Amino acid sequence: MQGNSRTVETTQPGIHDKLEALVARYRTSEHKRPVSAHTQQAFNAFTEWLGDWQGPLIIDSCCGVGKSTATLATRFPDAKVVGLDKSDLRIQKHAHYHNNASNYRVFRADVNDFWRLLRQAQPDAAWQIEQHYLLYPNPYPKSAQVQKRWHSGPAMPDLMAIAPIIEVRSNWLLYLQEFARACELYGKSTRIDRVETTTPITPFEEKYLRSGQDCWVLRSIDANT
Ligand SMILES: C[S@@+](CC[C@H](N)C(=O)[O-])C[C@H]1O[C@@H](n2cnc3c(N)ncnc32)[C@H](O)[C@@H]1O
Image 1: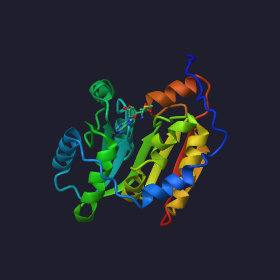
Image 2: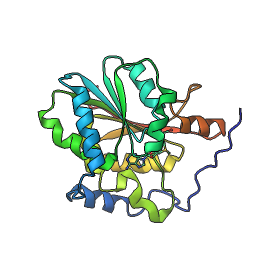
Image 3: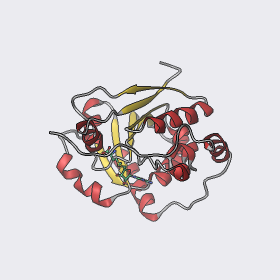
């Protein structure tokens, strides 16, 4: 089946000229936005679900309908996997994508707040976040929207602090090139490859690949592996 997804349109010719200044600004400033009540509740439900879990944890942020969360849970049976998305509608649709894996949950949460709560909880936690997936985040391709991209916004310090390995996918290569530059400024090395698969991990990936678009994957290179 052919898809009809449009390619990303941008007037931005290369890495945004404000990227480095934005990364530097947020790296040293405190994220003061109050945590929303619904995300605090989701975090409480998440810690209750984890109980005394002492093993690896995988986060699937902006998971949409959670197809990737269920797939990751099957791929990593020794880990607990958590999918997070702010859209109640998408989380409600997860029932359709549920598989038999019992080692995962999806929660409606704003990741801006959830990442901060994870970071605060981490020093005393028995669990360890092993990997963090951020698959097809909204690209905000207009040049003026640069601060809405995760790597150049206020949540980046939390995103960088919580997991040693991060994987980000996009159909806009420049998004990942910017993300890679921001990671470099945090001392993290990354590599970008083309997604080569016949079994897309998310509905957006499926849509883009069916439309004949290239998809790209950035993965951090863990210094210890
Ligand atoms: C382009 S969709 C990709 C969904 C899914 N990863 C996929 O590839 O099919 C981006 C998702 O990010 C979610 N999102 C955007 N901002 C968010 C935030 N602050 N917290 C949680 N989810 C967010 C949206 O609700 C949406 O489901």
